[in-house]
Length: 507
Image 1: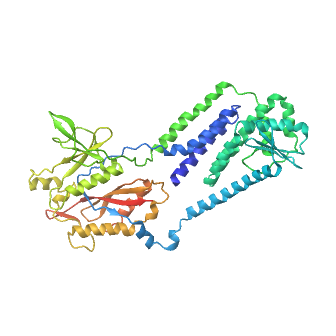
Image 2: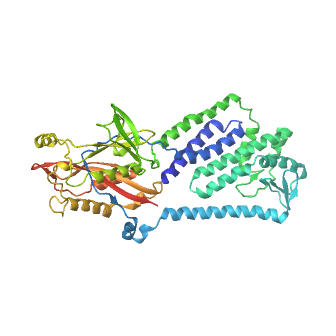
Image 3: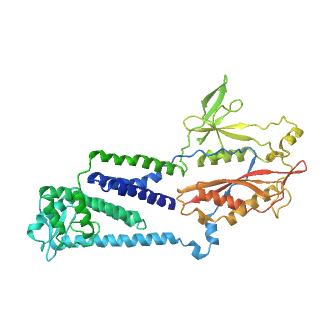
């Protein structure tokens, strides 16, 4: 969520910068109004555009799949001290929310009280509320509030100005930003936007109202410092001292040439760069289970054979000769649901005491992927295999004479190794790191790859997670694993690779 908020604020800064430098001094008032409203909405929508990124493939065939580590939020809560369980950011956010909601309701109550206290006089397409012993003038939707002490010679001009606000629904714009101030009270750009659009509203009303009279006379009304205003930020005010100079400058400004409307085309490269930016941090795309399609080879061609013998799955199956001539995927490139199904297949087929079966994933039809089963090359002699894996390459699990030994475990005790690694992760993984990352609700997995070298040290740590912060944290955690006794093959110490899945729940 924090990343999303940062992106929203960043986009709003860029949109307002374009407005201030290129558009604010032009007389395209209505277009500027829609620019401010449109970009304010776009800034919330653009961070939601996600394009799945293609990750670099990492060979998996010589990595031993460790049992999945499931992190329990309850266990972390029990270990945490009381002050660590308090979400201060949540308390701060909701405190601000309640405060600004209260301020908004007070403002709304003041307007309603004026209507109920002084009554309304229907005037065609608007309702007039006369305020005794006041020189206030402002509008709210089709209600125009006018002080009785304003000279009658000036009342008509003021009403004409406020009618423009009423007819063009300017109050809706201001209420929109008032609601944004409630939910994003900490975002300074909301206040900047409201300030900019309030000024544009005045430009629009001045441009329309001044057409019925000489601009000099209209400007004199503005300079006659007799009008007070109600201090309610979401009402359109006839007189606002801080805006008078800007309004007069804009009224006396020469009409902008139509060719300058091309400046709005600056939005195209700006939007393109924003979409490209958000695409770099994609989230997992949810997919649906479908009936399994079985692919086979006939006359050297791959054909599909729909099967009723399988339950609906995320992955299809290839049972043809050899490997299919199609794009191959690594585990890092699979979606979350596909990864889970792939790991279940590995667990089911690669059992202790049996030759390790390599399962590879290829591109199928309609965006689906299919698994192909590659049998181990059992025809090679022990001497050939020894020569292949003696020095530089990692040893497949099925060829190890003795697996690495975790400190405190019996030599070569695989079960103790698995349990010790799982316990290390569960005891040291800080679940609070998963908060405020903007992760969608549901089960999430982290995949950590590492090797135990010939000296028993953990090296070449890589992680794939739904967020860069989690990747870095998982890598740092794996690097803290203690030094172990290395794996043994043919009496020699060898290097062994592991893949460790870590699962946690986002609620």
